[in-house]
Every structure is written in C-alpha cells, then in structure tokens.
Image (cartoon, rainbow, N blue to C red; front, side, top):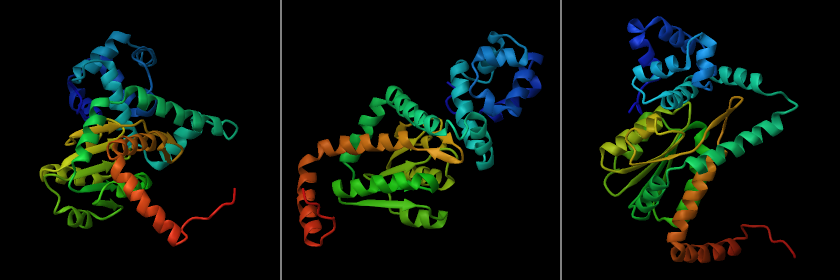
Length: 289
C-alpha cells in the first residue's frame, strides 16, 4: 500500500482536515523536505514538537503502511524536486574540500552495498530471462544516464544481433525510433532523479505496444517504473550537482555478466571474429612483454 503515492500532493490534499499536530509535521516537511527525508520518526517528532507515534500516524493517514514507506517516498520525491543549485547547497552543507575525496568515495561504496543487499533478485532474473528471448533490444536514456546506456549498448551489441540506442532525443524523434516496437521486443529505460520525461514517455509507449519493459532506476516509485515488467533498482546519490552513478553502473555490469554466462558460446564466436578484425586493422596498441 502507498507505493505510488505522491507525498507532496497527499500532504496538500489532506492539509485541511489534519489535526494541529499533523499540520505542524506537514508544514515542516513542505518547508524542509531535504532535511526531513533523512530524519527518523523520532527526530522529526522532536524537531516539530510532537510524539514519535504522532509522526507514524501522520504517515499512515496519508495512505502509507508506516513511516518507512513514507520516508522512502519522500526521499524519491525530494531528489526529483531538487534543482542543480539546491544540490550544490546540500553538498556544501555536508562536506568540505578537505574531506570531499573520502566522502564521495564512501558514498559510492555505501550505495553499491545498499544496492546489493536490497536488490530484487527475482526482478533481476526475470530481466535476464526476458533479454535472452528478445527479438530486438532498445536502450533509452537521457542526460547523465546516457553514458550508462552507451556502456550497456557497447557490450550488448557483442552479445545480441539487434540493439538500438536512443539517447538525448526530442519526443518526436523518440517516438519515430520506437514506433515499430512491439511484442517480443525489450525496452530498457535508464533514469534517475531528476527523472527524464522522454524516458518515461518511451517506457509508457513501449508497454502500451506490448513490449517487455525493464526499468533501471533508483526506486519502484520512480515514474519510469510504473509500467515496467521488471524494475532493477540501484542507489543513486547526489554529489554536488553531479549524480553518483557507481551503483547503477555496477548493476548494469551484473546484468551484462548474467546474460553473457547464458550466451557464452555465441559470445566466444563473436570475440574470435572481433579479435581477428582488431588485429587486422591494428585497433589496439601492441605492448611488448
């Protein structure tokens, strides 16, 4: 319950009927959603002057099963709302030049660990099985997610015969490239906060046309996940105005490895041909050992 609730809309829609204590919580969250998204129910209650149980009831009255579900949705909504300037301000409050090296790498390590520990293995295996039977594979991404999409396309083009990359395009160009998509095809959408509207459009269109849709994003609450058959979630943090994409890239790496294990013979034949071509056309530097 509550998986697809818009936190900010729910607060605003219910504000008129809230008790005094719940209004205090609502007002604090709307004005300080960055801080509130990382607070426990106890610390949020102490900050606004209400009990922990009042905070939990507040979350449940908005339609959530409890405070953890509310907090997860708030974090997702918060990251989607932050502008680049707000990201810089948040980063400045959390680290300095002296500790930025350690803090950024520690964040990446923690995000990979969380992704591994909380990953949906059933969704991952389902995505792998779907890819193995794909007729065509489309990979869609925009903005900072584009390098991950290109990385995936590079290796998938060695494994599969028909892989199409669609990145950083207009809506009309997107639909033109996708208009033949249908049953038997796979569309992989990659997007993290702030979510790309074009990627969301691609996922909705592909799902409506019978394609199997795989969402690589930060949460099952992501807009690109709403029509996805398989949601592969990876932790996405904010490092100044830049996204931390270490965990998404690690997840993509795992997906490539899982598929390659199932298609080992085909890949070996591909690499035998490629190695001959690379050698013939002197693609790589030769090193003496």
